[in-house]
Amino acid sequence: MTSPVLSVVIPMYNEELVISALVERLRPVLDQLGVGYEVVAVDDGSRDATAQLLLDAGRSWPQLRLIRLRSNSGHQAALTAGMQRALGGWIVTIDADLQDPPEVIADMLALARERGLDVVYGVRSDRSTDTVFKRRTAGLYYRVMRRIVGGEVPAQAGDFRLISRDVVEVLRRLPERAPVYRLLVPSLGFPSGEVAYVRERRVAGTTKYPLRKMVALAWDSTANFTAAPLRVATYLGLTAFLVCLAMVVLGMVAYANGTVIPGWTSLFLAVWLLAAVQLICLGLLGEYVSRIYRIVQNRPSFHIGFDSAAEPVQMEIPSQRTASPDPLSIP
Ligand code: UDP
Ligand code: MG
Image (cartoon, rainbow, N blue to C red; front, side, top):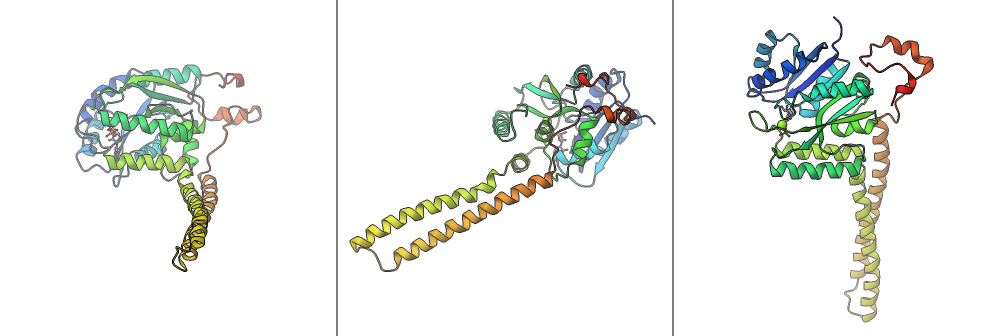
């Protein structure tokens, strides 16, 4: 069997209410692309009829694959499973609830092929259908993350994106346990483009992202990209040390005035000084832990776009790109 040109990965958790609408809208879009494709539906441990409905739909839609996770492992884990199993030269990840319009997939593929890009982000130009709470928290999330990770993270780009096989291979080699793809993919630094789209209303059912999961995603995002929380100990330690210095002065003044209980000054100073020393040491430990963490993450610092010596080898890798093999065409 030849590999499909395109894989569409869809994580699903208790999405029985959206499946018929999804199939009805997605299938014509993919059929009209004129390329071989597969749909990889990842059932993330649903407790409703999601898997059964997908199996039923697959009977009349041979390109529909079903992957089931044994338990609810979360959106990003479901994406990992889908991307690892997908066979396509290009891989699109999209939500099941039709908030991301499938028609945009055609634009993403066309843009990637035309400009030889490895990544095309779907950027939400309008999210007026989301709740005020969702819009506010999302706005804050993207602002903070762009500061932490860098300006290469597009604002308002969730997990609706197209990536090339090369990107998938890099992602696959990373040892991260809780990847946050909307930050990880931009930080890899592949040539990328954007397609704007209007975020639609969830077609049926309710959000599968309660506050608990939103907070977990925000914490994974922070901890994966910055060691700043480890420095809290250092800052607390420095503060305690400054307080300690102020206490020395205060203690001496009190001692000179003779208004102090004997032993109070030395005891108080000892407590603060020890706290300061301990916190600073903890902060130092954090500095080394964060460096070890960077090494363990093993993220590549570059990607080779062309190597004349490796050309014969490269030619054997089936490439779905229409871009010419001219090294100068690599963006
Ligand atoms: N999802 C998942 N596992 C989870 C939570 C969500 O696979 O634990 C899927 C869900 O079925 C949907 C996508 O992730 O396809 C995005 O979730 P949702 O639309 O509920 O999030 P929202 O749009 O409300 O942020
Ligand atoms: Mg949604």
